[in-house]
Length: 202
Image (cartoon, rainbow, N blue to C red):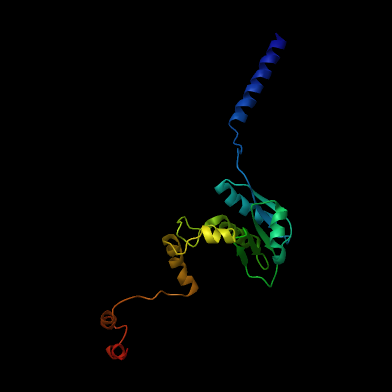
């Protein structure tokens, strides 16, 4: 009887374990990866947080690793990661806050003078760009994904499409640029934008 009780108990434990494992969420499939390469002893937590935020949202694998980056050897540096695209985090007072090569699928975050939260934000910004966040869905757009000279010739369009225009229009004030208006000379005079005498001279 005691032996029967032990067997029943073991079966119950096994069934409970199986039920728990059946409800466990696991990763299935997926290919390729993105590398966030810490080339300057930046705070690892900042890179891991950025990787989790964008990786979990897109359900793609992002690996935080250590490595090096040199502009003259950029392709060699990304090849060393084994990744499909990479963000390198460096510290260099001579560089701007970021460098991005959409075509080569790499970007650089300059962590010089940045705290951990700012490194996290800039890593997200650069990753968003190299992963196509600035690309257009319209085939006629100049902002189609391009990764080679051949892609530029065959895949990129030659106009600025509506999705890009909307993004640019909202961004222009940040650049200190204000669009001009097109109107008739008479309307411009009526609105007081130009004087009638000035209009006559032109």
